[in-house]
Image (tube, rainbow, N blue to C red; front, side):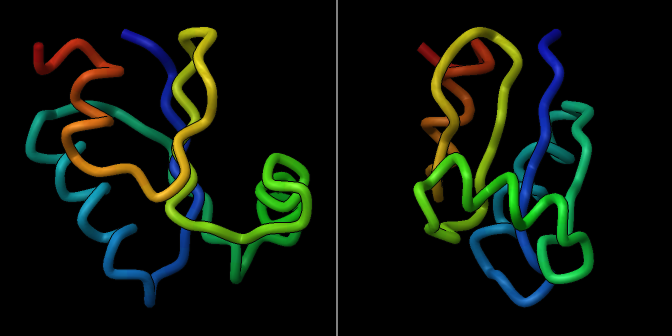
Length: 82
C-alpha cells in the first residue's frame, strides 16, 4: 500500500473525519499537526502557493495532493471504492 501523510490540526473537523476514515479502514498513515510542526505548515503552504487548506493528504502513488478531500475521494485513490 502507498505511503500516506495527513497534514492538519486538532481543531479541524474534516481532519478528524479523514483520520477516522483511514483508521476504520485500517490504512496506516503519518499525521502532521501544522499548528505544532512549522516544517509541516511550510510544506502545506508550498503545495498550495501560500494556502493552508486542511486536511492535506499526500498519497505516494504519483497522484496530486488532496486538499480537504471527501472520504469518497480518499477511498478512490486508495482503491477502496470503484
